[in-house]
Length: 489
Image (tube, one colour):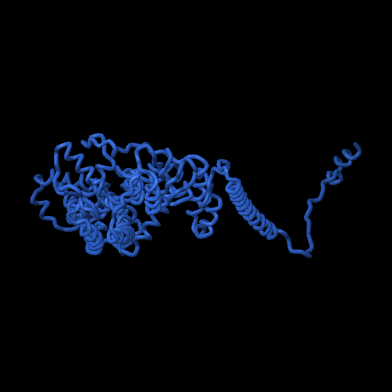
C-alpha cells in the first residue's frame, strides 16, 4: 500500500479507541480511493510521531501526524490527483471559520468528557477500557502503558471537578445507613451481579415471610433479603456518577447542545443535504444509495472529527453510560448522525448499500520495519516512565535520541539519487549515531563514577595505622612428646 495510517487499535466495535484516530479513518475512507492506503494498529511508543500518523510507504517518509495535518496533506494531494477528494472544497469563508471553531470546541469540551467516561470512571475503566488496551497492546506493554495513559487523560479532565468518579482513590467515609448491619456492610462492597442475585432470592422468598420476621425491625436482626434490598437501593443511588449529577449533567448537556444547535435539521454540521431525505428513512435500495451519496457529498472534515468524538459517546457499551444516556435523551439527532456516517464509511456485511465505492475493508496489522521502535525499547521506555522521579523532560529528551527515527528522518538514505540529499542523509545518520554514542558514554561514565564513589567509601582512612590480626601457626612443639617424635621424622 502506498500510504500507511498508524492509529490506536480497534475497540468497542469501532476501528480505533481514540477519537482523533477514528476521525482520520473516517476521513480517509471517503477521500482516498480504495486500495491506496491501509491502517496499522500502533501506540505512541511504537513510532516517532503522535497518532494518527500517515506514512508514505514508497518514499519511507512520514507525511502527516495528527488529524489536521492529515487533512492538509490530503487537501494538497487533491489538487494534483483527481482520484483524491477534498471534502472541504467549496466551503464559504464563514463555514471554514465555523469548522475551525467547532474543531477547537470538540477538543476542548468533548475530549474531557470522553476522558471522564473511559478513564476517570473506575467502573468503565475496569470493565471496558482496560481490557480493550490489553487486546490492543502486546505483552508486556499491557502492564506499562495503560496506567500512564489513564493518568494523562485524568489530568486533562481534572478541571471539570468530578474526580470522585475515580473510586480507586476514594477514601471517604461510608454513609451511616450502609452500616445498618454487618450483612449490609458486606453486601455493599460486592459487585452488582451478586447483589442482583441476592435481590432475586428476596423476590422468591418474599411470599414466605412471616409476621414474626416483620416484627423485628432492629438493625442487627435484618434478614438477608431486607439487607440486600436496602443495599441495592442505596448502591444504585450512591454510584460516583450519581453523587455529582448536577455538575456532570451540566457539562455533558452544555457540550452536546452546542453541537446539536450547529447541526440543526441538517444531516451534517456545515452543509445541507442535496436531497430532501434528511428526515425520511426509505426502504427502497435506490433511495438508500441516493441517501448515502447525498451524505458523502455533504461531509466535511469537521463532520469526520465530530463523528470520531460522538461515536465514542454512542457506540461503546460501558457500565456507567452517562454520555450515551444523555445524548439519546436530549439530542437523539446526534446519535442518528453517528449511525448514518458509520453506515456509509464502514458498511457491514448486512448493509443494504450497493454503492461499492464506499466499501472499505482492510486488515489491521502492526507496524514493522526500521521505522518502528522494537518492543524491547518500548518496554524500557515504559519501565523508566513507571519509576517515580525518573519520568520527566530529560526522559523525553533521551527517548527522542534513542528511538529508531528522528523527527525529520528518512530511513531510505540509499534510495536518493541526489548527491546533496544523500550527503545530508548520511550526515543525519552520523549525527544520530554520534548522539547515541554520547548518551551511552555519559551513562557509562555516570555508572563508573557512582561505582568509584561507593568503592572509595569502603576504603580505610588515609594515614591510619593498619592492624593485621593473624592466627599463630601451630607447630609440633606444642604437642609434647608426640610433637618431638614427629619433629624428628
